[in-house]
Image (tube, rainbow, N blue to C red; front, side, top):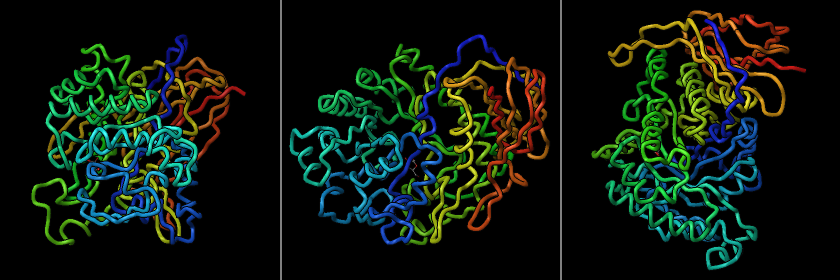
Length: 497
Ligand code: AHR
């Protein structure tokens, strides 16, 4: 397979926020995950130091919180100040102790060095409650909410720039779901009030690829919005936990761009593509396992609706299929960097996350290393490129067969140094791929990659099968070929000294 690039044109700058993440009050993401005051590895604020370190290594740029479905019945005012009353979380049907709230979240973001991104309650909440939250976080001292923050020991405003109005409010499963018409006017009101409190905020609102929903939303509130929010989980297994196999996951890689194409088309038709960017603020190959919760029959016993969630914790489920898919999604975001400005892997800790916590430490799952590769070795500018002789194979998912490209390649350059970095994914389960680099470049070639013994390789406690390997390949010459291992994610750097 041959790779060419048009190096005469300047590269397009991608937004680093496409490597963002999400954390929700769900299962062991917050409590027993990143926040665990009784754990010996936690700091004075109850945050797991090993988790924070892992987050720093992948330079988490932005972290969406507190939900997800959780937020649609969450009242932020009960989660600040000295008196925290536990409440029943109606989305996930558990008691939330309320000890992790806005101040704890902001402190966590400050420790990681990432932008906070707060998703508001547009289910049972009101426009006023949302804008009160912005007052609490962003006003210097005016009004009772800023004063409340100060009296809680936080004199400096948090300056939270990114706010989402709602989460999946189109879905019948969401507490306080809305019709398309209701949504348009609620977002308009909320956005207006938030912008009156702090005009420097950037706002998004829950959306999907549905034309009627989005037209209503954009007609009412397009003038206030900077972003439109979409979510996707390709392997639909929240009721079954029945994982698609490697081949089926490769079929899903053919569909990572579907939603972006649809939303881009709509924004272009409305002339909004320069003003409103896509925030892909929840995405993952596989849905989270939580039987009954997205259905009318809720389940009576905890055996039916609650305990099965622990199956999300089985590390052996997160293999090279997840890693290869994750890389294909990130290539897609990079390629569409003119319209996709943010993406949030869902979630970052536990459940389907890339970091798993246990009593003695953490496990970094295969997907973690994809972020490590992309964040630490890839360039920040996207160069136009094209390929020849990409192998193609018929593959199946749920009895449907499709022809699937067996490789995905992206060329990047660096704004702060000369050289290139190519993200090259070999999706083939068993075969190596020879990639011929027909590039006009100079420098030393270093290959950074993850692969694992088989497509089923995974990491677990005391077991590291998937990590980054590095190889020096010598001086670059145009036409040089690099052999990519089966089921591998590679960054090929060509760097001038
Ligand atoms: O299953 C977790 C949920 O997935 C998130 O809360 C929601 O936003 C998405 O549907």
